[in-house]
Length: 520
Image (cartoon, rainbow, N blue to C red; front, side, top):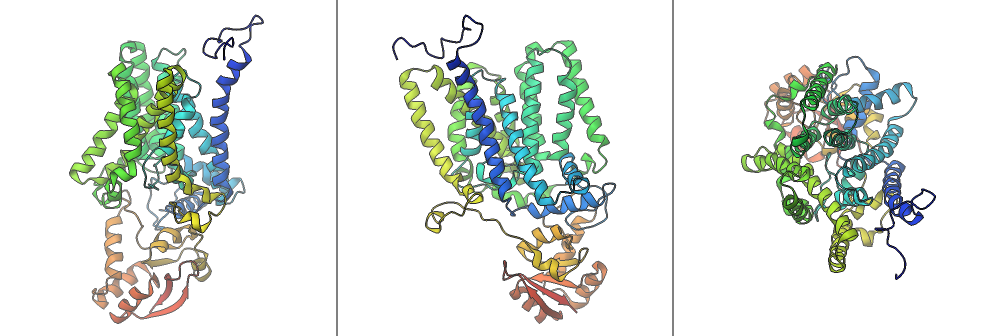
């Protein structure tokens, strides 16, 4: 409007020494929106935390950790073997809340959902403001991260789409993401010449925490740290290099001192993890295409301006394990996909704000139209998360990707006491029974750090195989002290035909095909 100065040119203080009210509002509004939206999403998840995926495992972790803070058994099998990566600093805080705070596990999950949502938002604010002075950049970057992924949902711990976070907001992986962003923010401040020595011990604590909380996220956190070091290499004085080395040593000492597992236990053969990560390489364009289509051009723009841009370097470093997994079949490395996308998503958010705030009128129109289109497509893909707040009408749900909460598995706890060992052969029994301290012979996921894990998995498969000689099956059942089977009726019938005596005891109402059978 003629005669009215724009926010871009009215940044000088007024005569009384205060910034123009319009400028203050333009600066504060996107920051306030960032935290308000994050809190709202956290409260939405906290209202009805869903039970799906690995929720049963995390319930089991809280139960076991709170009951035995000194030497907790394996949460998925109840085996009294020391060391499990599930016993992390984050889950220790949850267990302490359960044991000493008088809070039930679901209340702890509710609190964790809100805390993690705000932690991720504050981490994005902390990190992105080191890359861009635009007040709206953190908000746009976070919007890109949660909405601009693919046209097919990826619901996975450590994936950052809105629907995935709706399922995993109270998981350690989300906490680790927030800590990672803060770690990068601290390092960027220190490497850019920030005052004081406080960033280095803080970085040591944050780095150790990420590595202990979620090792796949820690890989990306390390890539980001390397990217920042390279980007600021010309400012690396001897004193700063010594301080960084001290921070690295401090982080290593903290990790080595953690009493609940040794990080070296993860360095063995992890090939058994590849099979469960194979879906990360199926339908790749459907899962990641939108993020790549938007992120790669944004990274290219940043690369033209600086060959050592930290987001570009983060993307390149993250692409190495992703490509290695694709070429070799070591699909566990596909867990680096979210960090690869994250680099491009943050870049896209920053570039969008830059164009909208300082580009030509034509550029702003094109950028705005593109942003609306991309956010609409990505938002529709993630829109099923609204099911957390209110049931979506069936007519609409059929056109959306809606993932429902599983409910619970209390029917089994009504039939069996805590501590019972079962032979589990149904999808939900393997994932939900440990939450009630009812333990399958073998864990649902490979645990390379657990002694005898592969043998237990082989033995469970042998017991469930109708072709196994009855004497061999009976010997294994005695060895594991198993008297109960949870199986589908069709499999129970095959085992009966093979000579195993089974008595039907109960069936689940929520999962009608899950039946409990007494063995012998």
